[in-house]
Structures are given as structure tokens and as C-alpha cells.
Image 1 (cartoon, rainbow, N blue to C red):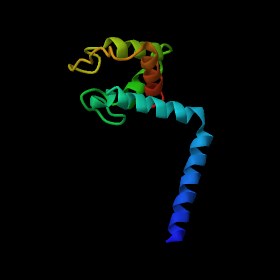
Image 2: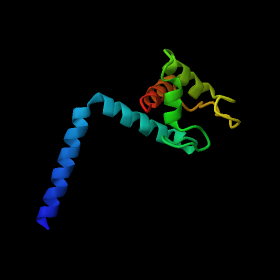
Image 3: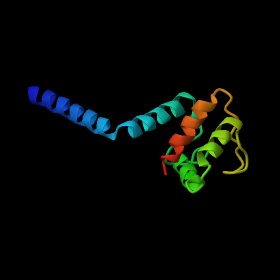
Length: 112
């Protein structure tokens, strides 16, 4: 039984070391996902598949070539949008601050 406990501890230590090595990029990704979950973005979006709205990976791929992609998405998140991804409108997200919208936009763009 002790060997299983040691193996679990060793696996946890290895995972922690891998995440630490990933550094700020991983922390930024985790913060973006947590914010998306906290602010209910995931009620209409999924990272990998279409739901009520487009998959966030699709959004990232569509705007990856735009120089102003982060600013553009920040405004779409804050102000809402209609007709870009179909007939279902995305409402304005008035519960978000501009900084939160910028964090979400930056995170989405990492998903390409």
C-alpha cells in the first residue's frame, strides 16, 4: 500500500515540476480558463466544439492572423456580436471589466 502512496506523491511532484517549468504561459492559460468558467463563457462556448457559440479554438484560428486580434476580441466580448458566427447573437458581457475582457481575449488567442 505504501508503494502506491509513494507513486502518487511522485506523480504529483512530477506534475508540479512540469507546470512550474511551463512558467507564466501556463499560469496565464489557467487564469484565462478559470475566468471563462467563472464569468459563464462556457455556458455558450466550449474550447474544442461548437455549442451555442463557436468553439474557442475556431475563434482563435479565425483571428490568429489579425494584428489587432486581441483588441478586436476584447471589444466583441464586452459589446457583444451578431451575425459573425451565425444567427445566435452573443450578448454584451456587462459583468466584465475591460481588463477581464482583455485577459479572456488573450487566452482565447492561445488556443489556436
